[in-house]
Length: 97
Image 1 (cartoon, helix red, strand yellow):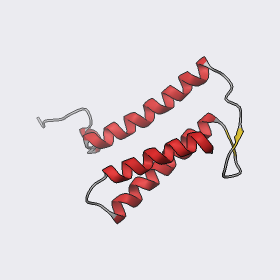
Image 2 (tube, rainbow, N blue to C red):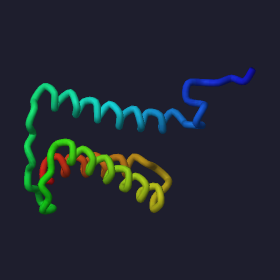
Image 3 (cartoon, helix red, strand yellow):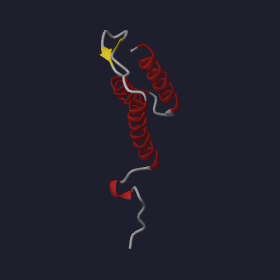
Image 4 (cartoon, helix red, strand yellow):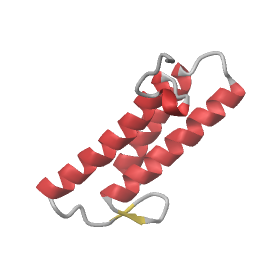
């Protein structure tokens, strides 16, 4: 019998699993926030879009993924810089978009 782990069925690494768990938890937290404090009506941001909290979460996650991929493509020696830029991007999106 092979030595199998919880994530071996998809050949994932632990950092990949943590990444997807973090996305799931952020969506769950956003759902809980919306349940506890309904509303969060559309807000007109710097990009000229009317966005809700869920829209801003989606934009920040998608943008963070592209930032990390770009960082890995341009400076693949360390991912910490890309993570820092992604966090700044998420703050920008939730504050001004």
